[in-house]
Image 1: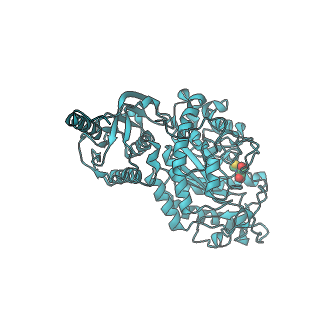
Image 2 (image 1 turned 180 degrees about the horizontal axis):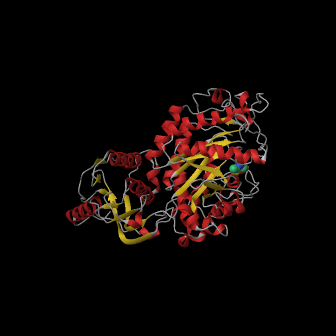
Image 3 (image 1 turned 90 degrees about the horizontal axis):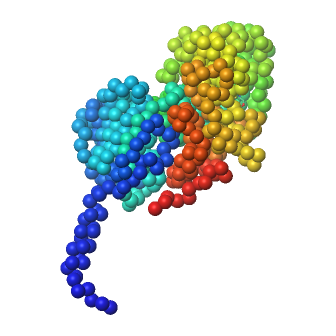
Length: 525
Ligand code: TNX
């Protein structure tokens, strides 16, 4: 072996090398090449990066409990994989090495959910008009970190974020997903998991389908048998379940901390067998119905001629409204095939009065459009373009959930084991490739409150199955709701989506690996 003639020189070279790498000299990174979903409105790259270290702080310009709680949410999110316990400090000025959030903005473009993110090699700054904008920006920052940020244990890798700037705000105010907890029940922990998924992709609505033929899932103190009896089973005859009022309040808070509004739905006058099996007096013949564990629709109806039925609804609405801070109450109103036409009109009009007198806006599936709907009422379009047009003619806003595009319970293709196919198959591109404002002649962008993807749960029984139907389509619905329509296209989206599979894998998500996407298997070095 040759002897090293300059051992000292080698030593110093090694030292210089070490120092160079241990100081946070930023690695060049390209913000333009990052895969952000939903796609931001404006983005420009500056070719450097910011590195998070154990000394990085999360600072806020102003101070409030709300900001502190967002700060600790962010710090907790970074902690497991980085191993850093980042300090949160409010009432601070921007300083090198830190994340710095400022909500004192008054930037009309951004609205309440938008944000401006500026990343240099020295600092990550976010300006927004409200705490909500800060929360949304954190979801972007999260996606700018390596997928390993999703791991539960400390990873020794550089935590770098590509430099540049992003200006971002949503296209639609209402960006939601529905979860049917009636056909199969999902508990508090499962619903929280669902909420976390929505939050990641900047969605802001969780619609909970709380009552249907197969199960009543929310405790109503004045009518305890609804849950005792009506909550005791589910499709297939499992044990069902329900949320106590305390648990529902917990969900409301959990969602609110993620700037997600819960929309409770009590479906009526049809889809009510669980209630009809709990209280005989809700039936016209005064006889209790049997509990139902099948999947047919359209066979049940509340008795629209009885005053006790409206007293019942008043009680249900009153208790739910008292626990629901959001502006909406969903009355279902779909597929009431066993309710006489005139009775349906009379019923929906009375229920609308109950809901609005309690200060909420009523939402109903598009069938409600045929009734004497008041302005402020919202139609959720799922089945009928004509009813969507009629809604707009009557001055209503609509939520777009066309079953053939937006139903998370539709199969991907003929080989999908889970799900239904009555509205067709919805491959990942079909779910993404549509424009709410171009779907129906006469329904323009300004008529549309937003977009919602419903997951009906006749065929899904556990989280793994939910994951399979929801991922990856949910990300597409999030992008439809948030991103500028003119910036969306499938070719570009599917490349970004493929990168997200790395994150799904880290999160342990059982996603549908559509053949249309060239899924990334591991991170490029
Ligand atoms: C139709 S969509 C329904 C639900 C079913 C769903 C299954 C709507 C308003 N009603 O009762 O669960 O199809 O895809």
